[in-house]
Image 1 (tube, helix red, strand yellow):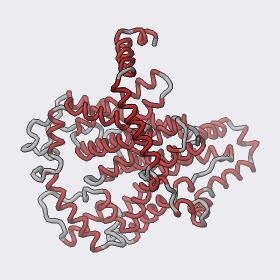
Image 2: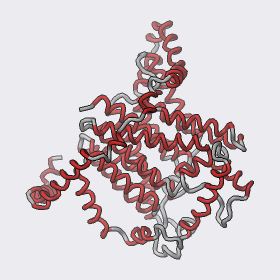
Image 3: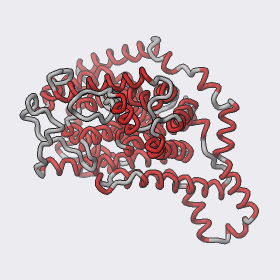
Image 4: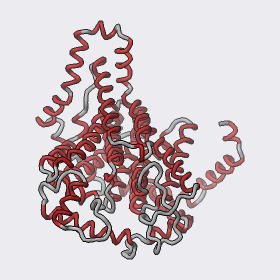
Length: 505
């Protein structure tokens, strides 16, 4: 550390920073930032976003919430009663005390678990891993509650709209035209629901929130290193991923441990903001350097995916991140973005220029997919075709709603796909969950003093906003592992909101 501070590079950077602080440019940027902050604080821009709706206010005290909470926490109460009945036996058992101790560290175990789950190569992946892992975490959480008695599953903190969405998922199986196919997809959604329930319930401190973010950052670092090694190893260009007529000079698109470059880009879109939050809130030099390295590797890998929708989503996520974290930095952030444009590689710049180009085969192929998804919604607006992409595919094939050379996999739009699968109730539950979660996060960080919880909550909120934008051009849940990552980030945002409530100004 001493060598780093005394190095020539460090002294040069400090000299340049001191010169900037004394410059007229710094004074100009500071005035612009102050004006921006005053406009944001005094305008109506954030008031609708931060205002808590009637549904959100009434949910914790509602009969539905209390009943659901009682049912969900019933196993924990029974285990606690069993512990009291045989307290001496349990306290005299080494393994029982170990289980109770591990149960208190559920969030730590989850941080390591998500890292291990998300770096398994696609060819070795099984979706049962997710359900098994979060079921074990739920048991671990119950073990902690059994020994202490002060732990419970936080149904109130999850909110009304996610519960509504889960109800729509179940109904989409009941009313599915291909119920046996939809049942398989129900398992994926139940895994994601367990992820949200365990994550929100297990979080008790900002350090635990940082450990969860560190698990995501570890996934970013390992998967990005592997993606970069793919590029260096001479990965062949896959013609199904690239329009070689418009992108003749574009190299291969990396996909890391995942089966598709767009999927890998969506994982980075969801986890890179959490990695950046670790850079900003780490207290130790080594942890900050490690998080910075992971973030830089992730940005490089995201560029190598050449996924345009994820690029746009990441740009929106970064804007939201700065806006929520330090709104006074918005002018400097936009200036930095403008200065970075000339340094973009030609292949990335050329790829950006193809956005909206109807001559691009990838762009043109989406139009028939959108039309087919809309046709399903028009014919079955209330119930949808059934849970899962396979149910929608069968319905479209049965009614001959899709007419294109490329096969129909999904609608390439998460909003169309959710409605086509689950009907209007699923669409309301999904969009309501995201908007409600983002609203709660924005409200919490504006009234919370600067802390690690505040920074990570800003990052999770930004990632959700970026995914909403990316979802306009892609279906992020085509791979169940990405669905689980999506809901994990959502749960981190809700857990951060809970912790921010304890740190209000």
